[in-house]
Length: 440
Image 1 (cartoon, helix red, strand yellow):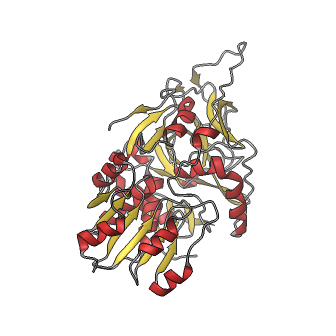
Image 2 (cartoon, one colour):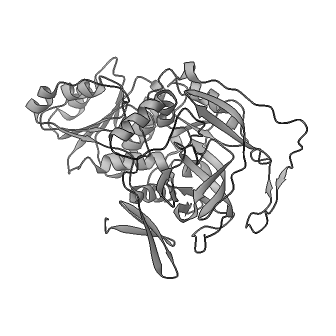
Image 3 (tube, helix red, strand yellow):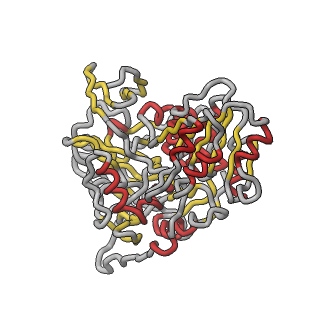
């Protein structure tokens, strides 16, 4: 267990563990292999697999418009104009299809916080999971990670969220949050049998729903008056922070980022945060290239007109050390990156390819390239990302381009299959039934 940790209220978080201090006693839970973020930006035939089926509520049931205090709970009445809180509305995935329906009201158990979702970003990993759910489970098991997730049963995705605490369950004495707090959290819960992810779970739903259960000990109060929309981007920013941290950057290094979806943009913003002064970004989408510029890229190119490596040589003379970040995750991209990379350079693979791929190892061997595969982030990086957003060290505003309510999630999945339409879409319970533009 790593000794490095950061204290956040009564929490402490380390690279491979989380915990809470209660009455001076540290309670520690190790969190090996935070297999949370299947990054990358491909929308793989999303249009064909999204099916919006809205189930009618029972006509003989009258739903109250205010949630009241349940016996023994700390929940306060909440106006149902934000979300359909008399009924829990959710976007439910199952066997490659998406439907919208009412689900059971989650009841917080020991150690849980019941929260009302304020905003939840749609991640490229959710697009992947909808199409490649079986492969995701199969390949996760091949890595030795335990998984009980079954994509052929109902599950509710969404792991980039901010939320308001409504109620604390039993055994939450000393929890660092209270009802009414705006929080975010690592997208995992601590259970008696270990750590389980939210969203890619048949037990713990994600943020495409009005309500969620989170581990109270892992909830982090959003600081500095940061709003709920920007706070929801903590998770993708942590992915970029982790990728750049794994690059072993040195003074004078330059960067090429292949792909300007959210993961590529998170990489760009963290490269800029760390002082990298030459960042070449490549994407076919004009909108995403413009967003890359707004977030710190110093040169952007359309790879159909100029390969990224050519642009890098043009602006650097081809003499400076280079780190290439592959943030797309489609077959063939890694081999292309190997072929383009100069000798002795580094390639960080951020985008997750869920299919078999081919590379020419001899090319990488002959060039003595260093390939670094990365996944997700650790708890310290998550907390650091939230702090960077809240303190204004990084600005995530240019990424946020639209929003929808729960009933609009299928439309949002379709919209993200058209990269020029949007960059990052937020699901906000109570929002519109279709995607609408959002300017902050």
